[in-house]
Image 1 (cartoon, rainbow, N blue to C red):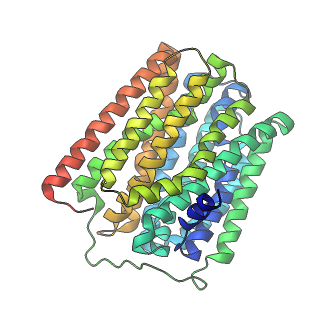
Image 2 (image 1 turned 90 degrees about the horizontal axis):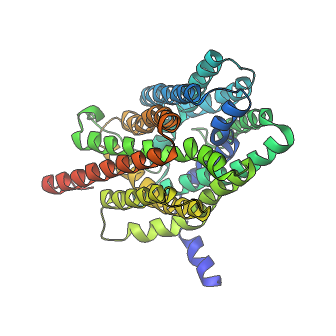
Length: 403
């Protein structure tokens, strides 16, 4: 046991202090965004919106994310990642608190759009900061550490969120979300100020290439868009499936989703370190992760036994642990050839567009055809994603485009 623990600790060695601080700030921030997994439940249960209305609100969620990611990338290339991150965290803290006071369909839709526009300016800036703070040989593990922080926050967040709903109601979630975002911004101001940190891997690109002209990167983004459309069902339609079909409580839903974050916290770093040294390419590993995620949706349609929910979550979690760190690393590596903010903004935007498509289409499919057809459709989407990733891998081998 002692040897296992020692080996686990060793997987974190070599990462810079700045990366650790960035991970901790992300942990504080993501632990506070506990309202997001419960947003669809809040809109239907407390505000009594229809599934169609919820679908449009979640599309506004994605639309704000698209605009915010694009704007964050532009501003990162112009004024730097630090200023963008500080503005995003502190301002979104106030907006989270304000959102609870909006109760009309139009008000909520606009509020969610503005909130996500400001909040998601953080993502491309954070990726560029991560690239700058970590040495070349540590980038995949640095990405993994950030993901661990995000998932630890998500594992604690939904479980705590479920308790807050039971004791304080949904309004308490918005206050906690806002305060934690604000605290994360204050912490960032104090520990990662440019005068206090050193850059480990400064990337200066003369005549940077536009990300829009990188064909392989665009193909990769298309695959990740489809991956996102399927994956995001776990944060909108799947919680409704848990409640309506299996009659799980909010607390039970929080625990099931929290299991995902806990397993990632415990297993992802050792798994990534071992795969990093394997013979497989980054695109090949993303394909494997996509296959496991596809299997998770197949399990949702197998039977009425509640155990399939746990099995499906396990397959999705392992797939996520493999696919996302190496897709992040692929994007960071391509970004070294061009405008970093632009590259990472497009990576974030692919998931933002997925938000627009995923939640709305998922809600519409459920409303018209039910959950079984929805999960079959999601499986088909993942199979197309896998096909595109195989094509990208074949294309890069032909071009001898080294990763």
